[in-house]
Length: 158
Image (cartoon, rainbow, N blue to C red; front, side, top):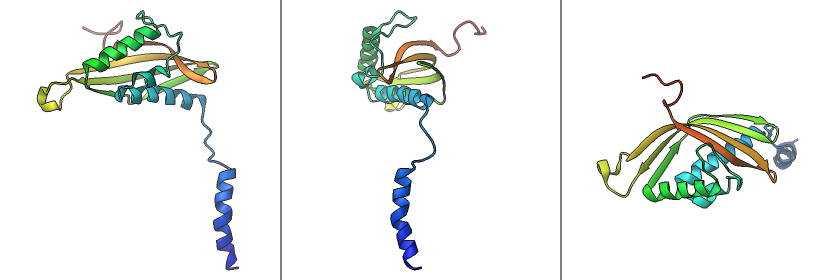
């Protein structure tokens, strides 16, 4: 009987490896990972890491294509020494091979100057995003994005 606890110590890891956790990654989880990868890459100012998640066929209502987004990122990253992106909630809807992510992002940037002792950002804005994604070669890629400063638009009160 004394060998039973020792035997369990050997069997338990094998059982855990054979039967992984019950949570299976959903397509919504995969889409959320893409959005958070873009967020993290932007904060690290890694243009190529952001672009890995953008479709080469990207087009948005603002008139940007893949190269336009590349230029927009380069401009923003060059202009701001430190970039922060805060996204409290991401709502995701997956419909077959396409998906939509809706979220509000608070973007801050601080330049190379020492404004307010280097504590306060020089640029601050809250934006509402609607990001469209599609499956390309088994991976989710951003195909379009619409953004607007929070509070602007059709429903805004004077």
